[in-house]
Length: 349
View 1 (cartoon, rainbow, N blue to C red):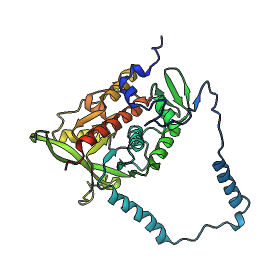
View 2: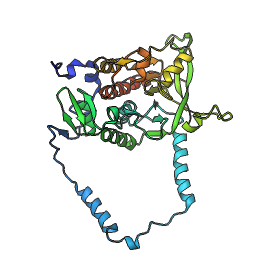
View 3: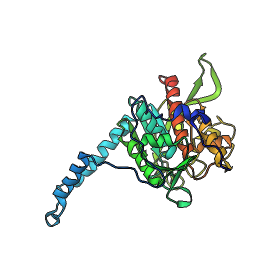
View 4: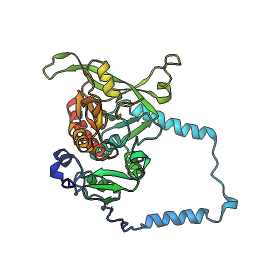
């Protein structure tokens, strides 16, 4: 017998955090594009889309013999890229929130923060060239993405269509979800994605209590230490290559379970003596794992919020395998936690 369908009331954490049917901050959400029983949603082509399509056809179709790009000099390309990138490095050297890892959980957190707090500077650090983590495909390299309810409310907010299967929904291709989420995150003017960039260490400060007392060797996290990923991969065979830094009162770490760059922040907490040991990720149990990850998303040490599968290494939680609702739910809760911590920590050196 199938378990009863999930409701928002069954998951209080998600109820509190996920976008409601009235949208976020009182704004109306985009029209839901739900596919039921395989029937595609109705679509409308806007006047802007028609004009854009006509412009391409008018300017290019049938005119290939005379086709030519506008003239350019190589130095113009170089300056256009470097000027903007180094301006971003300068601007985000002092950030309000840093998100480590641009998988489905990290991107969800960035999306929520971008919508709720356009006044904050948010830097997203991703070790890979391609953001998205493991969310470009479902399980075993299959296309479809499964999300258990109530994570469908987040898909509604994004405007991603899906098929409703009762207790869960199915997006026809995981890349549709990830590309939509990524494009929306990148469109926020207050968010900068630094991909092909690794976090090599955490910036720390002594943790001072409200009473002014310092707790032994306890620290709070005050930013991240970065380097090009290719440089990070070659510290063992090259001479010393010192890193760069980004200061921030809050760091959200979503680096996934253990791997070459996975669970980085929590493993560093162990080596710094801030966490005694990691619990280690347990075997696959979808029903237990997803609830546990969302509910446990939290500030693990002062200034560091841990979310997504990185939490499984801290708490000894189960893995959930090819279902992605927990990554969305944990990302939403991480954004909420980050804002709470930001208000507590801002102004601290």
